[in-house]
Length: 193
Ligand code: GAR
Image (cartoon, rainbow, N blue to C red):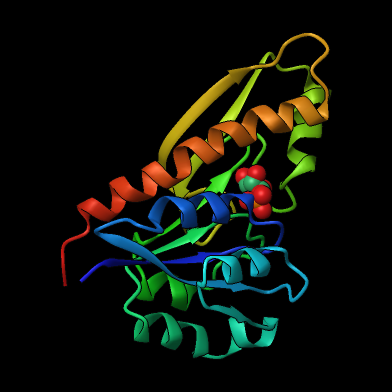
C-alpha cells in the first residue's frame, strides 16, 4: 500500500501544490487529503485541481472534538505535513501521530520563530535586523510553536537591496525544492504497517 500524506494549509498553498505535483505519479506515496481551517484558502482550489479530497474544519472541531484524529486515522495517514498552517497542534493529535507531524518555517530556526511569526512578519523582522542571510527550516512539530527537532535547513544570501519580495522569493524557491524531497525521505523511513 502507498504511504499516505495529509497536508494542513491555511492559505495559498504553493507548497501544497509542489507536494501534490511531486507525489502525483509517485509509486510509493500519495497525498490523501488536504485540510484547512480557512474556507477561502486557495489551497482548496489547488487540491481540487489534483483531485485530492479536502476537508474544512472549525476551531471547535480542531480543538474540542476527535473528528480530525478519527478522519486521519481512518485514512491511514502516515505523515502529516503542515504547509502554511498557523494553528498550534493540539496534544491529542500529537500523541496520535508521534514524530509524524512536520512543519515548514520561512527562517533559520530558532531565529524568528514562535507565536505570530509567520509569512511576511518573519521576513520583515529579518530585514529590520539587517541579517546577511536567511533560509528555511523543516522540523518535527511539538506542543510549542516552531520548537520541534530540526530535520533540515537550507540558507540563502541576502544581498544589499534585497526587499521583502526578493527575500520571500528566495525562501520560497528553497521551500519548493526541499519540502517534497524531505517528505519523501521521511516516508521511506516509516515502516509499512
Ligand atoms: C511558507 O512560506 C511557510 O514557510 C510559511 O507559510 C508559507 C506558506 O506558503 N509558514 C509559516 O510561516 C509557519 N510559521 P504557501 O501557502 O504558498 O505554501
